[in-house]
Image 1 (tube, rainbow, N blue to C red):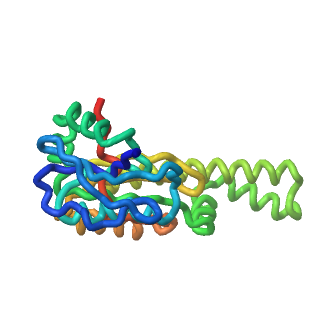
Image 2 (cartoon, rainbow, N blue to C red):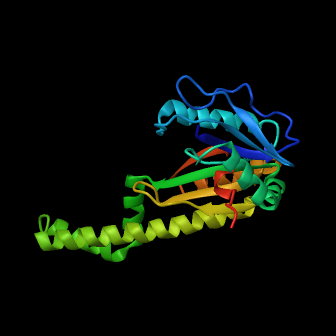
Length: 241
């Protein structure tokens, strides 16, 4: 049967989640595969694995329980191998890499921050910072709303100014928070977010990092920040080459 891989840990890890429910319905039991100094946290996998809510939560729960006792290299949802022997072969082949990453990520957690603009606040800010936009708004107002061409021009100017501000704020956010973290990973952009950043933070310095986030909130009130963490360090596992 196909083997599902949740994560990789050191063989001396004190609390692997062997009592946790794995993916599947009914849940497959979680087990470990040891190859010298490494263990893979695994279970069997259903043939029709899909990112269903129950399985996504089970994946997260296994990693959360494992992370309570020590560092784990988390795999993202859906990491499959043909069988246990294939997993063991990967552990043996890349043992040095995985042991190094376990050492480097020990005592670390990931915090993901997604940033967006508060629309009304940003429009006010754009108006306050851009003389050309204010002038055109006043001219169209005095002209009873202006022509269609003038409206299009105004819309394009506002859109360009907002895009420039998004680029500026994304760079500034990273610049402000990076000194409080051990590393940063820039995530994929998607509609609705001007920044998607993951920070690797030492667990004993989390308060310092969150204080830096609060400072950004105070200094940039037009930014909306969503903070997710502490998380397993998904963004910093780095696959072997």
